[in-house]
Length: 387
Image (spheres, rainbow, N blue to C red):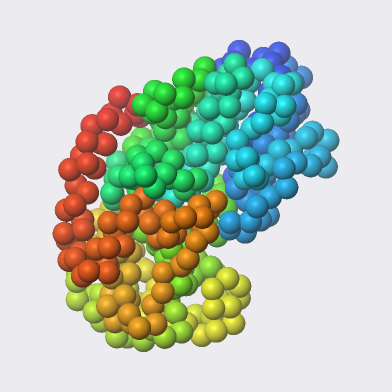
């Protein structure tokens, strides 16, 4: 198993040898020996590393969710300028690219549409196209596999920094595959090179790669988190806690007014595939309901290949809405720079899901509503798959 990071330095150094290089990285930008990309590039005499760029949560992973970051600072270790791509612009400004020949992206994704890293990549590609700079993507595994897709396709009317292009909630692609798709299908047109992995197959999950797991963001501590995230993330669009402020973010769902046993009894009767929903209490140490006792559930995945995270989360949301409608509330704007739309609609990429919940549309009907467009996506993505 060899990452794009390892292959560019060993097999494809010609792509950056002698070039002035900018590097988009975060804490998980490491090789199989725990060495960070910034250090590896900086210590090479045949690479002129001139700047670092950080996605959401920063190059050190130090900032929590939805916190606007400083535009830039000087990195203590390398004394290089560091620019935030989660600031007011969210894309490299022309001045930031002046001293670069090529911008390299080496960021670990988690396989979900609602994760800003892939849109940082897309916006950086747009900036490079406008300024005539080359863009290189060093590929990394999709930690939840590359063969399963799920969810509705984003409606372009709900495009945002957590859903820029019409892809499903669980896309089953790697960052390099997405870069190829974005560049062609959505007319970015930058000078793009991708460095594929070696030894990864589409049905592999992270824990079969032998690679070390480093948190790609502060609330993505484990592969278990990434497994449920393509569904549980929708609770960011509600006033129900998604478990931030606990040691099991996105696996714990709840609120002070929820009876865990009432909720899980209704849900487990649905026989959702590959999951058991256990009644649970928890007390967040920050974020929603900080210091308050919440009732709810923990999502226990019993068969991850059968598990449908988006369907499961919709079932949880639907039952919470039906059982506790008097106390349930949708979160209000803004959310991820969007001021004029409900966060739940931004996250789901449509208002149809929320409207279906509110009007009591059956769960299976919601799932059936996106199957045709999901099939079209699967067909479209085929020509961009590298593995």
